[in-house]
Length: 171
Image 1 (cartoon, rainbow, N blue to C red):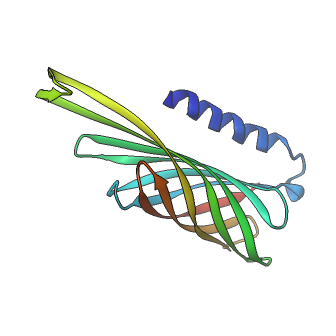
Image 2: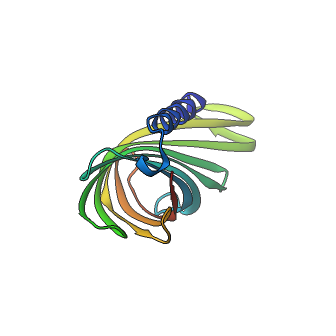
């Protein structure tokens, strides 16, 4: 399931990249960054794309892989929309709303009782769907490079606040 979602995310980014032919007319930004989530309690590495749909709306898919902690692997897939409420040539400020999918995998070794069954080792996986709400900003470092910062809360079966920073390149 996770591999299929990553494939869908890569396909969506590929379609966005193929929508524009001239670099100066490009509406695509892509980059990477670091993210921390409160209930996940570990740092994550994020890959993010932004499609500038209009002057006030942006589409921003992202995938975050969180570093393993206490035998738990977390990752998130976000399909966010940005409503731009203030923008100029150098700075952009926006509200965030979107859909979140949170994946977790617990790996255990040694004898543990899992749902009434004994086992020597194995893993348990789960996924949850939630909604994202938050705010973000983008600041120009150069003509093509931007510093990006987001703060959003995910509401669902897994609730957490996440803060992320990163760099975006405008193609």
